[in-house]
Every structure is written in C-alpha cells, then in structure tokens.
Image 1 (cartoon, rainbow, N blue to C red):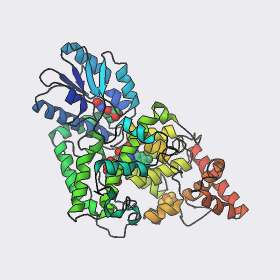
Image 2: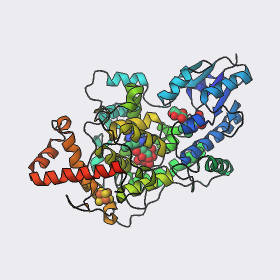
Image 3: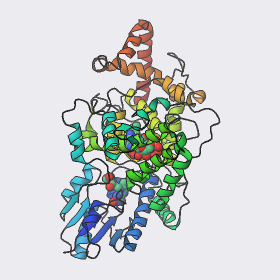
Image 4: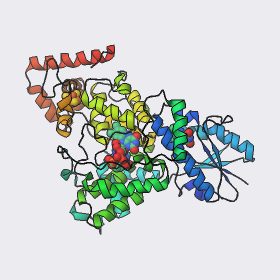
Length: 508
Ligand code: FAD
Ligand code: DLZ
Ligand code: SF4
C-alpha cells in the first residue's frame, strides 16, 4: 500500500533514512513550504529564501530520480500552512493511510508529527556520525560531558587524521597554534558567492513580498541552493580558506565578516553536504601538503567533535532544555539586537553583519552578542529565540545547546565548565573594533568606560556564590577582591547604571 514520505526543509540529502525505506514505484514524497515553519519564530528572510530555493531544487532532483513528489509552495491557495495539515491533504489526495519520515531536528516538530492526523513512522536521522544510543553510551556515568573526550572517540571511530590508534602528528588538538589576531591588510578570500538563478530569484521575490518587513535583509543573496553549488563551495573553502582557517579562527575584523571561515553550516545543516565528505576533503588537503595540520585538525574537530557533541546534548537533555535558566536571568532582550543601533562597535558590527548576511562567525556569536547577553543577565529564552531567528544555519538541535549551554550557561554547566564571559580586553585583543568605538576599552570606570568592563565585574559579583569555588574562576575573584573597595563600589554602581539604561530602553 502506498505510503507518504515526509521530507522536511533540512532533510535535503539523497541518502536519507526515510528514502531508503521508501519505494519510488509506489510511495509519494511530501514537501511543503508552510507558514507554521516560517512563523513559529520570525526567521531571517535569507534563511527562508535559502531553504525554499534548496527545497524546490531538491524536489526537482528527486523527480528526476523517479520519485513522485507532491510539493506545496507557500503561495499555493490550497496550502494548509502546516506540516501535519499538508500530510493530511496529501493523504486525502492519494488515499495513503500511513506515512514515514526521518526524525526532525526539533522536539516541537517531533511531537507535532506524533499528534498528526495520519500516523507517521519516524526513522533515525543517520546523516550524523553519532547515534542517540551511542551518545547515551558515551555520556552514561560520566560526571562531566566534555567535548574533548567525545571528540577523541570520534577520531578513533572515523580514523580521520589517525596513525593507527594515535592522533596524526602526536597531538589530538592543535589549538594553541590558532587564535592569532588578524594583521592589518590581511587579504581574505571570502566564501564562494553564487549568482541567484531563476528558481532562487523567484523565491527571493516571494520572500521579499511576504517577509520584507521582518528583521534581516534578503538583498545580495549569494548562498548556494543545490548540492552541486554546495560542493563547489566546499572545494572553494578547502582551496582558499582552509590553509589559514586555524590561524585566524578567533579573529574579528571590521568590514570582514567571513575571514577564513567555511560558511558551510547552512549547507551541512540542510543536508546538502555530509560530515564525511567535508572531513575527507580537509584530510586529503592536509595529506597533499596543501593545508597545515592545525587547520585540518581544527576544522575536523568542529565537524566530528563540536557539531556531533552539540547534537548529542540536545537529544539527551530533552524538550525542557530551551526553558532552562540556571542563572535566573530575566532581563528583556534590548531592542538593539534587532537594529544594531548601539554605540558599542563590537555589537553594532556583529548585529549589522547578522542582519545583512544571516551569518556571524563563532567568536562573534559567543564573545560579542552572547557575552553581552550573559553579562547583562538577559532572559536566556529570548536570547535563544533571537539566535534561532537570525542565522541561516540555525535549527534548534544545534542552536539551543550552543546558546542555552555554551553561551548563556543556562543549563548550569552541562556544556561549559565555566561561563564564557570576558571584559572588553578579550574583544580588543581579538579584533579592531575598539579602535572606532565610542567607548574606551582601556578605561576601568568613569564616563565612557567600555560596558563590558563594568558588566563583567557586575556579573562575577552577582554570581559569586555559584562561581567562586570554580577553580577556573578563582583567579578572577582574587583579582577583584584585591581591588580597592571604593573602586569596586564605583564599578558595581556604574554596571547597575548600564542595566538600568537597558531596562529604560535608553541608548547605550
Ligand atoms: P566554521 O568556523 O568555518 O566551522 C566549520 C564548521 O564546524 C561549521 O560549518 C559547523 O558545521 C561546525 N561547527 C563549528 N562549531 C560548531 C558548534 N559549536 N556547534 C555545531 N557546529 C559547529 N552553528 C550552527 O550550525 N547553527 C547554529 O544555530 C549555531 N548557533 C550558535 C550560537 C552560538 C551562541 C554559538 C557560540 C555558536 C553557534 N553555532 C551554531 C556554532 C558556530 O558558531 C557555527 O557553526 C559557525 O559559526 C558556522 O559558520 P562556518 O560554517 O563559517 O563555521
Ligand atoms: C526552518 C524551516 C522553514 C523556515 N520553513 C520550512 C518549511 O516551510 N517547510 C519545511 O519542511 N521545513 C522548514 N524549515 C525547517 C524545519 O523547521 C526543520 O525541519 C525543523 O526546524 C527541524 O530541524
Ligand atoms: Fe566593544 Fe568595549 Fe571594544 Fe567598544 S570598547 S568595541 S564596547 S569591547
């Protein structure tokens, strides 16, 4: 009997469990652009345009392979505008009484499918290296779930950059060679920019009409939207950026949002690229002598280490993860997160890039917007939603552990052993932002002091009970305690002034 096969917007892979279970001569694939998915949070228009164009091309590709595909565009008048609704509509049209699918990357959608009007049997999403069961096995009985240990197991499992059972070059991790500050006048290759074709232009037009007044711009759209384009982007990255990827991984430069980053996460997360081919390409370039070991190892660690670990955490921690708030933070997200309208250069630069490109690189996400949010005590649920909205690579399985866990410490230390917080000195060391900022990074207190410098101590003071005993934070508390008592009081008062301004909606 005919079955429906549901393929979601981030399941655009040929080798998908639901497709393997299906029969092209009998079954019918359902793909749908629906408001329920575009609107459950107001996604950045570039993200929507990317996904819809890639979905349309993938549907055409599946048809070419002999599949029957029912594809609903967003502006189809009969569209019920939800995934379960489109399943039901397809069932009525085809006579199907059951459906299969691949597990979605978000609990919200998993439970929506459990309650769907037609039974949907979900198969595991085996496009990842580590299954839920394997991650559970690794995590079971461990006091701390540190990525580095998980990563080593994944290296052994894949054999990537291994010499027998030892890591290539003798070390598992070459990060101490990375994290350089970018020198002035550095030439940056940037990602491969794809000219929008007919399908992409149509989608952009629709997205502009429907979502044009949302946060973010769909102008200058350059993402690839097919597997072939994604493969070209991979080749471009390996050749032009990977050799320097490690060195400047943590650097931030005004007007250079991409530096030597891969810009592959939208393709990986939507299924246009797989972890294996991406890592194989990096390893091959290293073996050919085109790429140094610190770059190849660092890149492979992001993919088989961080990416897989983060996914493991999401599914292990469960649906309540996104509402955790270990630090009891409850301040509303300031308006400038949606406008970039602030005198703090690091934030206006990062938020500006985010609005324009639906992208910011890791250190901007962690040490600028994320750092400010945790220091200012912003409500982690609102911060989580912001990150899910604004980035083209954001799906809950990968966004939530990075935000709730790594960046906001709202999970109480499942992902991070200490909060990622810093004053302005870190941002000044890794970027050129402070040079053109209205605030003074060297200043410790008084008019014009970098807000990060004040909020940092305010944060440590507020959470002393929790963090003072953490060996990795003890030094900072000693530094604070050695400061003159009057100075400490001034800093705390000025930190409170900033928070009060935020609450009042005043410009900072
Ligand atoms: P590169 O720096 O070139 O890294 C290469 C690849 O490694 C990426 O494409 C990505 O697939 C993978 N990777 C690296 N770090 C991580 C990580 N921490 N978690 C998962 N994969 C990783 N990544 C997302 O894919 N989606 C998100 O919604 C997302 N939200 C984040 C929110 C915060 C607060 C932070 C700190 C990080 C977040 N990340 C997220 C991780 C990381 O910032 C992005 O994967 C990266 O910036 C994507 O750009 P790139 O392809 O140029 O990455
Ligand atoms: C993110 C997204 C958006 C914006 N739109 C759609 C859509 O219209 N149809 C669809 O099938 N998927 C969409 N997606 C991706 C889903 O939200 C994604 O599958 C879940 O967030 C789980 O990762
Ligand atoms: Fe950011 Fe402070 Fe530097 Fe300004 S001085 S760019 S606010 S770190």
